[in-house]
Image (cartoon, rainbow, N blue to C red; front, side):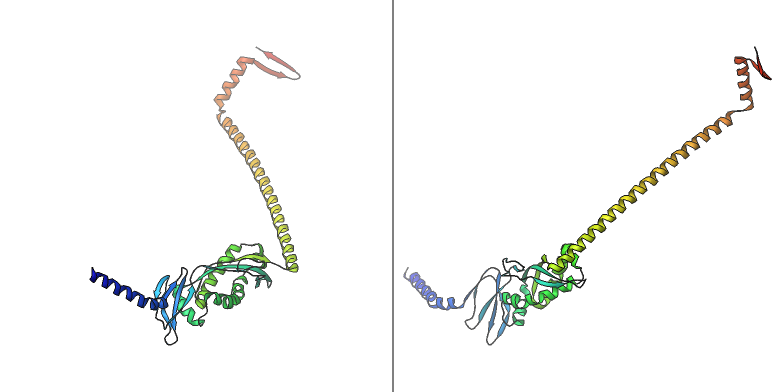
Length: 285
């Protein structure tokens, strides 16, 4: 019992002796982050610290870097992540510039964190987005919107445009910033008064064109219906005439000399002889 108690006291003493050192060297990486390890002499290490508890040498430092899903919101009105009017102008295929609100869901790629950290000299993910990414978004989004007209962006199939923006930003931001773009969308359009008038005029012109096309289509259908009805009537008459002609041919073919003599005999037997002399007629039985 004494020997066991002695060993226990030695172990407890050891824990008490080393616990201050362990506390100094212990690093806790929370969920959604990784730890970038660096030192003044060795620079940035290639290996990241993932979520959990880690023992790190006192000569090294750990910088937390987010890898969770984040959202960037740039809107005209105040929303989460948008402190004021953060909308911006993009270019269109018809040489217009139109103000848009935008949002982007993204995350930093874990396999690129070390390179990103080195490239931007220890900046955090938030700093990289706020000071670097936000400043290039307009130009990069305009590279997509310049293939679409103002009306496409204002009232067209914006889902297609947003899909192209997402793919384009995912490629470009992935190469330059180590960012994976999950979704990027133009969520609203804010034309000024003059541009709004131009849009309204175009909408009205499109509506008039669509109405004219609908009317033309109606007339076309009506004319085609009349043609079909006339063709049907002509075809019916032709069928009727052909049937009558076929009947006459059948009758004519059946009137042989023998049949005609028989019909004459039957008539004489029923009505007798009929003789016409001048203005008077004599019937002889």
